[in-house]
Amino acid sequence: MLDAYSLGPNGPIRLDLSAEAPLPAEAGWIDLMQPGRAEARAAEASLGAALPTREEAEEIEFTSRFYAEHGAVFMTATVLTGVDKGQPVLVPLTLAVAGDGRIVTLRYDELRAHTQFLVRAVKLGSICTSVPSVLLGIVEAVVDRTADVLERISRDVDRINREVFAAQRERRRGRRLDAFIDDIGVQGDLAAKARVSLASLERLVQYASLTLKGSFAKGASKNRLKLIGRDVRSLEDHVSFLSNKITFLLDAILGLISVEQNEVIRVLTVAATIFFPPTLIGTVYGMNFVDMPELGWDLGYPLAIGLMAASAVLPYLYFKRRGWL
Image (cartoon, rainbow, N blue to C red):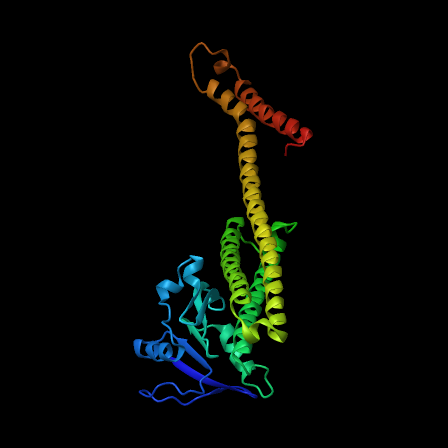
């Protein structure tokens, strides 16, 4: 899909495009989402340089994600999406700035940050009136969306923390402790993906501040770029804090599971210790040898029962006194 926008005083205005005609000269922003070959060629003709393929955009090398070619500057960030659907994935978002003052955005999935930015940008009186404002606005929207994801992780981690460390078992809502491991795993995976996205955004901001010139390097655009960089670094610190908390919770859950298992083993050990002496006595008197004097004694049976009861009660009282029960 290909959309083109002109950049005027009221923000981006979507242009009506013909299927076969080249992109109009007033198209200051070209937006591609999973483009076909014809759409990619039309955008490349307007940009004056070849767009990276998805495989090239997903490479982790710095030189594959950030480079200049034929007067155009290419920057690719990794963006987190699919969080609301419960299927978080990382997808590349490429921003290409041409030397003649055009910008091309290339993405391969619906990004909520992009949708939110577009809604804000088309409002009357929007400050999104130029290529720098489009680029900075998209990056800011991605950073804001990542911050929302971190806030969601923080709330979920706090909820898990309250349930795990509940004073009574019923306050854990009847859940087994090992069920919390799945929740912690989901939050840990989400935090790791957010960290990867923030790292790529920090690289993008650094590269843009060093490479993009003209209106990017002065005035409000320069200040916004610095502010975005500070926001990204603060979010990286926060995601590090969340990762440490998630690791602590995982260790705590595993420790509590070990304590519960030890409690079961302790109960079984005490029970075996209590019933071992009666079992031994019953085994001795169950041999039925002819020379056993108790076989012909009227009080032999009550004596054996009394010995077994006493051998069970005495260890129980001893364990109770020591506080082992």
